[in-house]
Length: 207
Image 1: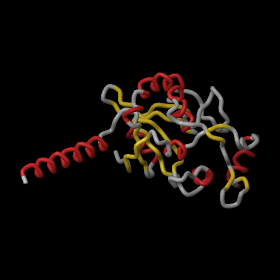
Image 2: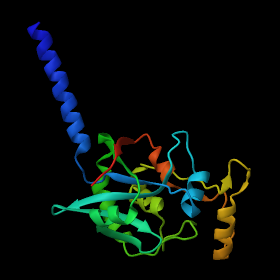
Image 3: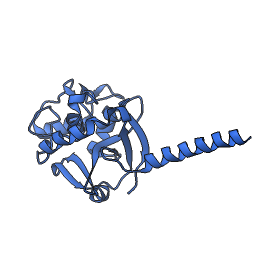
Image 4: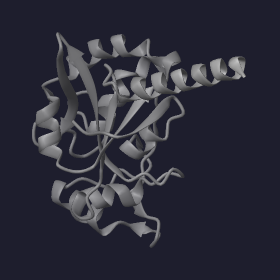
């Protein structure tokens, strides 16, 4: 009986440590923002669904420096930037979920910050066509970890799976840019990044 109690205590202790570790904000945690059900946010979700059935429109990364919690991301309004976590949460105002690189890949984070700093201050990549002068949100994260192959590029699609045709929202969007829809060109998106087997899902994030 005594031995059984010791084993049970050890199991409970391990469980408590695991929960505490997941609740703790760590450098390099990824924040995925749930898509709103309208406009471009909805269009992104419609054409980028994965088997996980996630519904994300945006991804950002937490950086802890000198006891200050920052968020690095690429936004249409500000381009690639670094803002306080509280400002990010106030700005987004919708459901946010947190993921974390699994332990065996966390060595990539420190190298990623060097690349991230080089990208800060560049404009947002409105066309989503790969280039070195502007970046969209998931591209920013991809490039941070590109040297260690943490995430993958896949052919982009702007086709609505329900109709088999280009999504109307994307047709209007690219017409306004005067750019041909980059169907099939390499790219990435928040739903694709969230599906990576190198990430651990931590759950809803509140701050």
